[in-house]
Amino acid sequence: MKIYTKTGDKGTTGLYGGTRVAKHNIRIEAYGTIDELNSYIGLIKDLINDDKISDILLRIQNELFTMGAMLATPESSKTMRNGKERLNIEKVETDNVLFLEQTIDDMDKKLKPMTSFVLPGGHPTISHIHIARCICRRAERIIVRLSEEENIEKEILKYTNRLSDLLFVLSRFMSFSLKIDEIPWIPKK
Image (cartoon, rainbow, N blue to C red):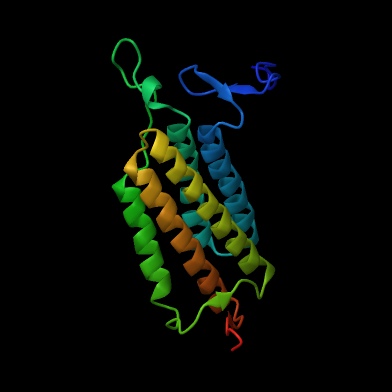
């Protein structure tokens, strides 16, 4: 299989099922931003020297890849002519969201309660986690916009929302693990 197909040379791309859309289509923006997030989480995984956290991030990367496939499959293409489901893979479901919640709770138990907002930064790894959190929030906004136009599985939105929460808690957890003081945001009066 060749990497280049030349089918996108005029600014369109194919969705799963064959429908062609403009490369700026909101569905492409949604799964493209999930792909960007996935790549960034790969960078974070490479920076963190903790097998447990690396395993969690690897699981998230796999789930994001699945989510991208789900987002690349429009409602009109979900079933084939013979009635079988076109995207025959495990989907992002409630159990995946619950895993994120449990992971958040496990990390949060080790942290001091928050008394103020914290400024991103303090260490390059922590800064990268905050950037991933921002990419995740952007993906969430795009997916919400897409969901206003087309039917999107509700677990995709829940997962994306919870993942940004996990990334925030992970940034705090890494501050704790690396013994980096969090910098509180104290607005000037």
